Length: 155
Image (cartoon, rainbow, N blue to C red; front, side, top):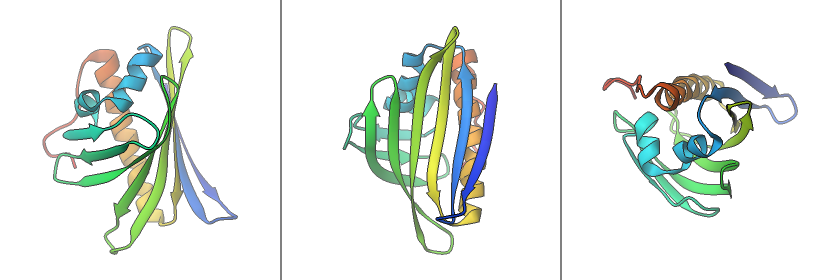
């Protein structure tokens, strides 16, 4: 089960990504996949450095050379983690957003909810929404079926 819902705030003129995924895996395993560098490299990144605590820093690299650094804004083990994201857009502008993940047990598995907020540029929002769908589907494939769907041509 996957749910993808995107929202536009009329008051602030910002966009938010909301996606939910169900995993057959235990909540601890799903949370670790979001917060342990080696686990992040199994489904999301080519290289990860992360200090998994509130105020900790991260450095993420993707296939294709894209790089991002930021900070952990919230960290509750096996429950929630939030990352500050700073993207340099094609226009040259810098976009600052917040990606938050909530993990909770559901039945014999786990429900993962992504809330990625603060998008002001509609193209950046659409691109990130698509990428989260791709990567979180891959996370599900890796955790539930031990199959990495990425190719060497992925960004």
